[in-house]
Length: 336
Ligand code: NAD
Ligand code: DAU
Image 1 (cartoon, rainbow, N blue to C red):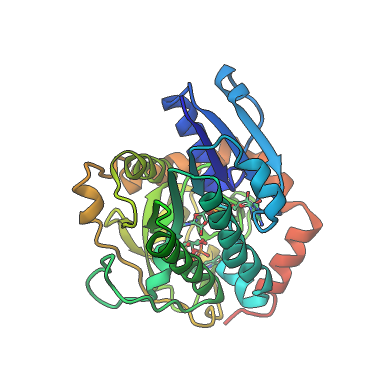
Image 2: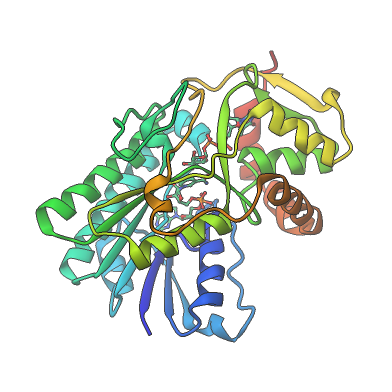
């Protein structure tokens, strides 16, 4: 039996990870340290017996006292908590630096003082920047382009320094774009699905030719589990699927699944500094025995089905004043 600290466990990927971990490691105790920001959309209501081994601490990863309390008796840390939306980081990046850089540092420092045996930092493919052809390996240069990506890269590098300088057993994962249930409807897939269900248009940035590599959040959870079981301290692992698709094609698939046509696309001004393409070489992790199991067409179909059957969940989020204000600020007057 082990005690695991998960940060950001009430967010999209963190909550999917917790559900996966509970199903596979029912004996483990889990502490979820989450500030419950606007993005804490994951369902953390108890749903089975194993859930009683899950404790939520509402608090900030950048607060040393809270972090010390959350880390008591903990053996391993999986650190998801972050500000995660690129467009919000373009509007205002201060909180990104506080949470993603100082918060990560606070956790590392507490982990060092508490003799943590495994610290997994959930980084992102965005730290590499954009690539026209080929794929990034773990040795590629870091060239982050958005304030969000730069803050994640900073956290990633501080992790490295704690391994090299303090011998803290840190492992870093850099994953591609996730999709699946409980993703906050500001991100492209849930925004497009829910807009179409509501009879609205979908805002496609620029020429729609930007390419993203997609992974289901459950395949991501499996990859993190593999890294925790077989990864080497100090190492970095890319997590990608090779399932790359330009945004306009992605929009086309979602439109088709929901019985809509091209007239439901609204072309809007491009995102400033918009990365053209992300692509990861994940052979290092594959050598540890991981490979993705959820094929994109099937995963997307299931995800669309999930949003169809969970309207009350996302309508509550989209109905909030703060969400409406964000959408207005982000999209108003941007039609091309
Ligand atoms: P999310 O925005 O859905 O959830 C983030 C969670 O962190 C929320 O529950 C929020 O309340 C919590 N949080 C924010 N600030 C906090 C703070 N100061 N203290 C404690 N908790 C705080 O994010 P996500 O999409 O689930 O991403 C999780 C992690 O995975 C992030 O580190 C992100 O950079 C990384 N990642 C995401 C993707 C993706 O496609 N979404 C891909 C690769 C890596
Ligand atoms: O690659 C991993 C990253 O993926 C994570 O580190 C981030 O936390 C996560 O938010 C995600 O970043 P992206 O910027 O790639 O995701 P987003 O859903 O915001 O956008 C995906 C693509 O869709 C991108 O090319 C921009 C485009 N887009 C997005 C929105 C919100 C649109 O065309 N219209 C939109 O309204």
